[in-house]
Image 1 (spheres, rainbow, N blue to C red):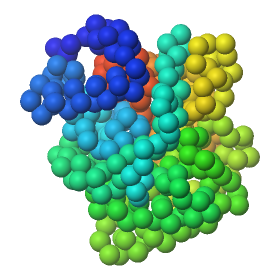
Image 2 (tube, rainbow, N blue to C red):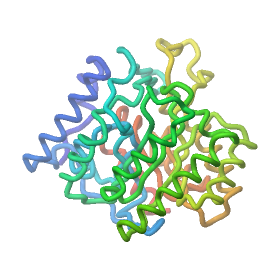
Image 3 (cartoon, rainbow, N blue to C red):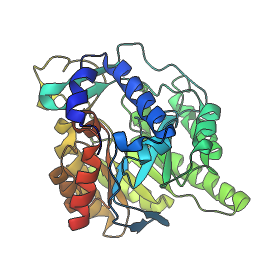
Image 4 (tube, helix red, strand yellow):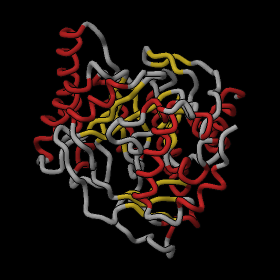
Length: 341
């Protein structure tokens, strides 16, 4: 029987949010290595689904950002996830933005982060990923270094794609974090076609070199209007991308106005993101048709939220902030609800 997160959360919430994050990640990693995963996890829900050539044990995955360096993949998978996404990793290690850079908004069940792709770099990331026993499909999320001009972003994404290609079950392309200067410009009609074309060409070279096709998914922002979403959807089809992840964090503060930390710079996640993320998913499904894979993420804090994402058009869902507020039980709750549906 897992230890109740209700008992642990008040202790963690007394700590600095980034310290609490690091402590939790280290704790579950140590527990798993000692064969004590049952202290924090329940058996996974069996609800297999096949998507872009991969078989998922269930429809609930871990979103990128929690395990930036791929150090705890097996420990996190033991929570019952159907898949785990690690990263974001950049070609060169970088410290990210100055601290403090992670803030809780408990009244709204939300977080604001401006981490800035802090990670140890591609080489260290791959060492960790290759040590994993790969109990579930593993997605590897790649980004560009902060010091790389946005005009040269494709260079970094090519380096990242080459690096992770043989270690990934799928690769997600993060062009939507609000915490790397000018990154979201890559979603525009002047930049996106060339980026996706360049990545498609790089992937074809790697496919021929290694004899395997690795799916590529694009992770997009929630702060897009319908014409922007339609344009991105059309480019996904035209470039041969295998799926889309909707969405990253939001810059909007409408739902948290007046709360402590609400005006901190960075991306807002958690319950206030739910409606915006679901709107983007629904618009993508409308534009892309019934067969194009969509992973829905943003504001899932209950089984009902996961079902809502599925009803809007998501094939799979991902959790992150919900884990901070609800704990590992949320994984099984969402997976079971989606299995019943």
